[in-house]
Length: 435
Image (cartoon, rainbow, N blue to C red; front, side, top):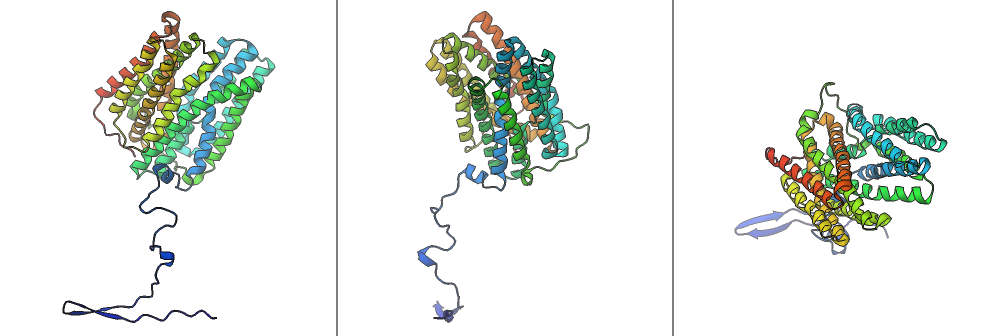
């Protein structure tokens, strides 16, 4: 039977008071199945997606995040992999420590220059060749260790890995570019990035230790190099989300703008370095040895969970976050004084939960203070300050452990956060703006 259009409706007349109103005809048909027009099937009325679902609904964000996570995991693998590989093949932890320390010093010098080139010429154009150089440095280190090459070749090879781009900074720069007009979403993205940092630095050493122990000594470094290169290629292939390069003046630098914040990042780095070394020494003294890994992971797990939760809440001021962190860092000291490993694990979990909000808020300050043309460089300067603090904190904690035992050194991370709080309180009040 041929389809025929429904007959047109006729005008209706109605009386409103003493006025005759003619209602024009309409061809709109009633909604099928009793659904209200405009309502999305399958979704409860009034229910909106969560902040993270809205975040990753943006085109291209899932792809560059996948590459970012692949490339970020090796950041927690390279150090312990190099130590286990060199110590296992050359029989010297002193040599292994010196090689990794040289790589850290080289990174502090090279990373800001790499970041400046990324800002000036674009992420894909600079990050890919820089990653290739770093990957070749890792492969050279493996070959030199295996072949019994002179010790200086180990230092040279590992120093070449300093060209590794700051993948976390580049990812944050992409979020800032995409969400420059959406402050709440930008806060959620920064919280996710901090949680990703904690997750990768929690899983990285575990994966590296397992590979070096169960497969062969070079497996950790080799796997980390492959993951870094693969992840960076996936990340830089997402050109639609890449922020455009901005040709700023050659003599411009974000150092002056972020210097007050770098002063805060130094004691925060001391906190990280001192807490790790002191906790390792304390747990080893209590006979945990290799089983200390899960206890140490509680701090990173707490920070990861708190970071994701903080992304769904209203941002707090940096001063409030530092105050909470200072109070939380006193807990491991108290647990160690009580001589309880169980209490220490709980204290590390709570200390980690106070860490992520502080880092998210501080990094948002860096975003706000850094000129747009130097965003990646500003982020890398912050990371460099943290690394410098970690090195100083680890060295100081090691000295304290040798001379004062494994309980007193827990005062160092507490003192470092107290110093950061004092420095933050001395600065002018700030609303923590987000670009």
